[in-house]
Structure formats: structure tokens, C-alpha cells
Image (tube, rainbow over all chains, first blue to last red; front, side, top):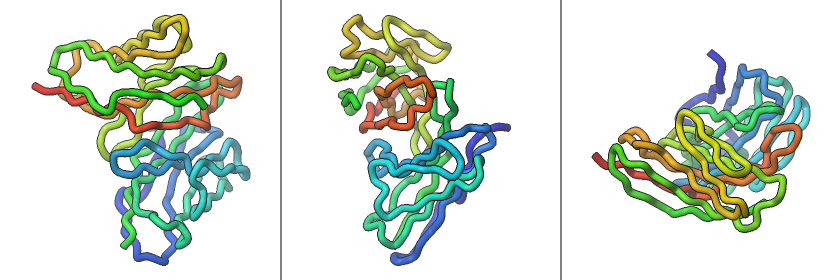
Length: 112
Length: 114
């Protein structure tokens, strides 16, 4: 089955700790994205990568970091510099020639 | 990027046709109109995309008038499982096809009642 997986589904951390969210896809897509969603709000773009070893900041990149060492993987690190890290995080991927982005199931991060 | 405006919420009943309208007055010449559906605690799912006139697939229809300043997503005979948030997006249809600058607003919460 082709698709995007995110793990874990729920994640709890103490304030001040860095945490890394996993995103893997076996769709052979070149581009991958990270979004953040707060309750009752739309999605906001954090980072995106159009090709391996390259990525760009989205609209709200501060306090986050990413890497793209493999085509299939695009992990997101939420650092202690992120002021309000508690949110629902969504990873997506797409490929040239197709119109849509494919989303993973999301990770709900709670920082206390 | 063109800003979109859509109703915050809509109510409907099972079996009815639902039309959700989105306005995008500043749409650019090379922009496409795309609709996504999102269930609670899940990632959005692509529904339909169009550039002008009418597009239909197995799930929905998308009506776009000649001036392209608005669009209407039409869901035929909705069921309880169609209760979700529906997002209208405007994004450039570049030759690469990767809409990396998608902007999701708050969307429209459609509630389908029995």
C-alpha cells in the first residue's frame, strides 16, 4: 500500500525539550511538506522540500528545523525555541504533474 | 497568493445537494481552484480542482464562472459521512505541478443532519 505515515499519532513532551516528528512516504514523491494546524484553524506551512538535500522555510518556520537526507523521509524537529508547540502536525507530499498533495494522518503534539 | 473567502459553517440534511461557494477576487491568470476535505484529526484529502467552467468527478462538481472570481463546490446527495471541513484554495498551476504554496484558510464546516 502506498502512502504517507507519521508517527507517533500522539506525542507528549515537557517544555524545553526538543522533539522530532517522523514522516515517511513510499509514493516516490519528490516534494514533501510540513503543516501545523491549531484548533479551529486552517493549515499553516512550516517547511517544504522539493528535492533531496534541499528545503525552504514556509510561513512559520521559526522554532522548527527539518532535514531531507532521503527522498522518502522528511523529519521535523520542534525545538525549545518554538513558543507554542502544542498543535496538530501534518506532513504531505506531491509530485510534478499531479495536482494534489497527499497528507499523512498527523501527529498531535502536546507540550506541558 | 489570492485570498479566499468561504462561509464558516453550513448545515444540511441527508440526501440534499450542498453547494459551498468560495470567493477569490484576486485570482491570477495561472491560478487553479482546488478543494480539500478534512475530517477531525485527519489530514486533508483532495476533492477536485478546476480552472474554468465545470469539472465533475465521482465525488463532486466544481462550477467556475467566466470571471473566475468565485467558485462553487457541489456535493450531490450528501450523507452523514460528508460532515467535514471543506477548504477552498487558489494556487498557481506551474509546470512542475507541485503546489508548494498552498494556503489553507479556516474552511467551511459542513454538518449533515439525519
